[in-house]
Length: 284
Image 1 (cartoon, rainbow, N blue to C red):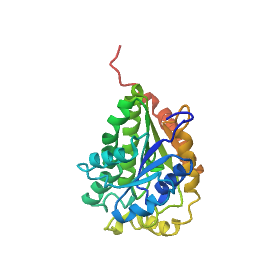
Image 2: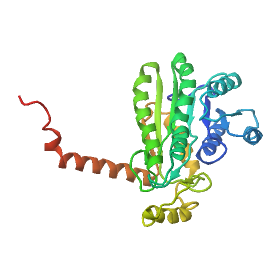
Image 3: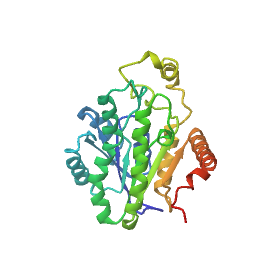
Image 4: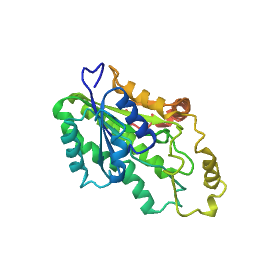
């Protein structure tokens, strides 16, 4: 999938009913590529397929958390589109709340969607890409996959898991000609901080001055993010078609700032504790 393509590529994008997934699907269709988009409800199929007047948009119903049904859904996608060139794991949501506030059920659900949902689709699509000897897997991470953020420890953990998975996967798949790219968005004007965002059911008084303040801040954050989903979609397409696709693609000036601050903090921590860190071998 690097360089210029001579024929229409086929993209499988999870979670195309709204947000970044929808923006990416529309941008891919606009350039003449085909899109198989996954939706959660059959009622969403017609609206998605009407995005293309030339029949380039296909919709399939898929719950990425149901591992038993994912292979069949991928077979449907292959039957309709003929092949898959690019898999974009976009389906996911944010879960906010202090670690003590989040229940086991809430924590497991966010991992089932954000991490294991990504695993489920990769496992179903990967044999097809590997056998063809080409393809690209794009996993939506977040700046929360690079840093810890007060009040969303489990969401951050789920995205950190996607980061580790993807970096290892990129090494495993290099011999097969399959690329892996992590997309790390900052704040974009989608439903992430609106209807898609979930808060823990419990709000512990002990965290009123920390996580409680974040709850208040997030009510004003939705709809004010500086990131344009249309421009994010264009950036992802550019990365997929690059001669040398990036392993990581930070999206937004805020995301770039997070990465730079993280690198600086890591370097400072390493230098500060260097003598202790390097004094652990057996004495010579």
